[in-house]
Amino acid sequence: MIVEIEGTSEIVQVTIRWHGGFDQRQQVIRSVASYRQLKDFDAFRERVNELWRSGRSTTAIAKTLNAEGFRTPSAGGKYTRCTVRKLLDSWQLTEPKRAQITAKLATLEPDEWWLLDLSTHLAIDRTTLARWCRRGWVHARQLPGQRRWWIIWADKDECRRLKKLYEHGRGWPHHGGSPYPIELKTPKERPTRKEAKHK
Image 1 (cartoon, rainbow, N blue to C red):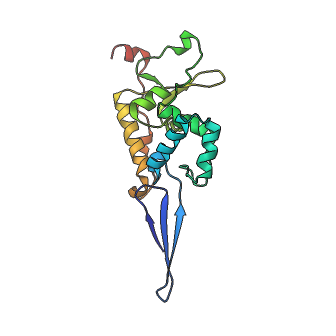
Image 2: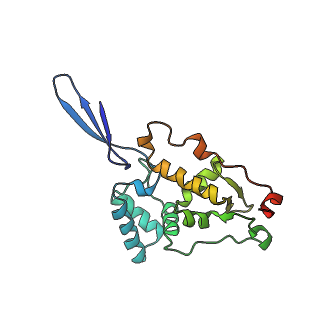
Image 3: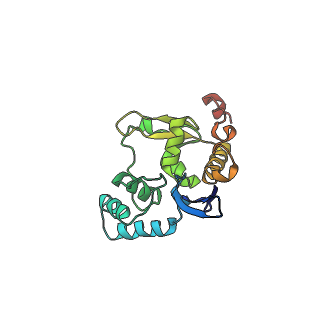
């Protein structure tokens, strides 16, 4: 059996070589780490932009994308109004809804970021950052309330690590092993408030 991945996309060509010289080829769809890895990402993004500019709702856009056969990064996944909204926010096509919280809770400590702001700063999609928060791959805290907003601590070193982690994840099939080495998914020790103040 010969397995060939088209770049870092979701497309996998599988060739089964039978005795007697007969080759059977089959295309398989795999899951990928981000939308940008999708083979038709440029066409997909243009279609989402076109539908949004036409005044369609996020529900209508999701139904259209599914009907037209656009794939999600998760093999076999379907688009929903929530995933479309997250995409529109990450591409800055909408005005993201900010946290309705008290000034005390909204005060950020040194090197802390709102998840959305860090997503924009590092060009990493917000769903990926949220997943890293839940896995403990970044120093993060979650605010109380219905929306449970994430605040992430990341100094310059951590920003560089997160970029490397993201790039490694996008190209992981070529690394011959686990997509996330331990050194890339382990955050550095966060300084105490006293240390940060004298930094």
